[in-house]
Image 1 (cartoon, helix red, strand yellow):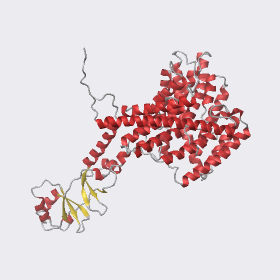
Image 2 (cartoon, helix red, strand yellow):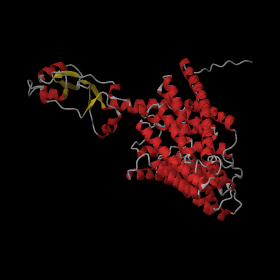
Image 3 (cartoon, rainbow, N blue to C red):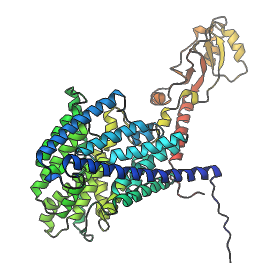
Image 4 (tube, rainbow, N blue to C red):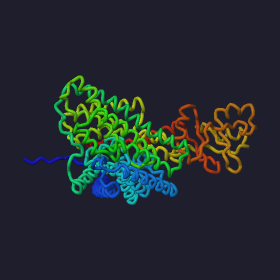
Length: 583
């Protein structure tokens, strides 16, 4: 028997075409970004072999001579400072990142600015900076796809999805983790798990990861093997690690911006800041060379378990200092990899100092290290689901998922409770922009009084008599009359109720004696958002909307302003809504 389904898609042909186009762009973008990231990683490794005699991103820099470390880092810092000065001269340092682009710019990013950041990041990493590829590769991916979308004249919501695709593809290419890349973009750049954004982002991330597998090879980045079965000691591990991770994450974020402010307070020129940071990095590296680079190789050494607790404590402090010195002095790069490194050392210390004395020396180390990595990364980066998925994809985390998830929840909650920001939103706050996430508030800031449906009141000359005005308003439901000068400039409003009350006593009196200026007189191109809080604090009544010559365009009520603002919020929510099933 054959059953015929009456089910059909409610999407219009144009919407189906748009969705197909977005998937095609995501696939193409993912392939391009994966190829670009592979080329950059190979190129940086080649340059490091020339400079250090070894690829310090993949292998321990302990074998590099001390003089070579100091020479390369300091000269590299001078070169980086010169590049920063050059970029500043051409106004290429005020770079819009993916979070800011989606929140304020409707997904619009500058390809030129993005390429400048990538170049600065390549230099920072090549000279051994304690930063990672993440910021540059997400900027590259998001910037390229945003540029492509702008050339194709895509709508605002489609541009925002392409920024998500580029961001996810960048993270996926770095770690070979498509699921982590996808949810990183959704959590940090989209701000939700909308199906409309999820599918293209997942496709772009999968494509970029696959290209990395082809060029560089497929293998887990972190060699965690002995996770062990679920056990009672997992709970104290998660609690202790989550609390400690939040403390370390907050310390790193505050330390980075604090160091940056200190350099500015001493009026150190831009060209000299990276040199100072490179000098500090070089000095730290003489004693603890593992702080150089993203540190993935060092994480695997920590997982091997052949380290003294004192050495691990020194490594934790040194990595914090190196990361703060680099990022705070102007090195371009992310704290993602640094947070994983710090978390690995934290997990090792929690295991050795707090768990082994209580539960015995047979406890497997790997889960503690992985939980620490997830906790600190969540505290600093602020994407809990993406971090858990990253541990699953890159460290073989299976039976320890629950423990790691609890660690992540505790670290995320305490960071929000004690501090209130992730590193990206903290940087916005320091710059005076209290942007708390990727919600599309740019479209709210673009709303002006011209977007309102205005009331058109009766307009009369200010010399008109009360008696004459009363005749004009007879048998009407008008509430106010607008008074204008001879040239048409707006003077004020007269209440029709007050007009009728004054009619018996002074019918020949000019209306100008009754005129009252509205509490708010605004120009038509002023943003609504500037008045939302003011309207809530007062009873504004009618708002006079004027043109550049102070001619009255119309009147807006407080209710109309708030209603239009609410409609735009709902429209933004619809664009980002979770659409699991088309009904």
